[in-house]
Length: 84
Image (cartoon, rainbow, N blue to C red; front, top):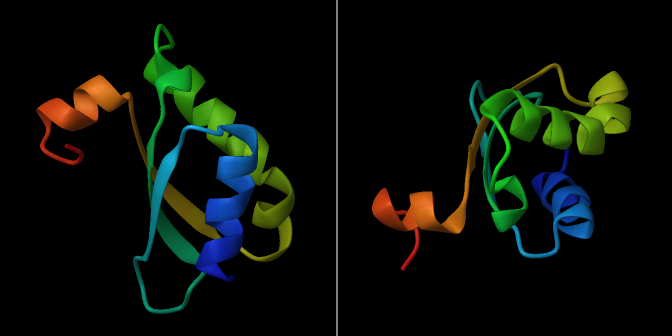
């Protein structure tokens, strides 16, 4: 799986998103994905993750075996020191 493809899929749906994709196992089919977007404001964690899974569902069928998601609003990401 090309990491840029995952990033582009998410950014197409969440235009303000900052996305970081990492390979968790060295096999490029277990991905860690950090998504920072204000589209998550007012949504519970489960809803945030469902948004991302809906975006990735076609890719997950064939190319991705597992994902570890971390979703944050820009305010929470700033508090965590992940963005300026």
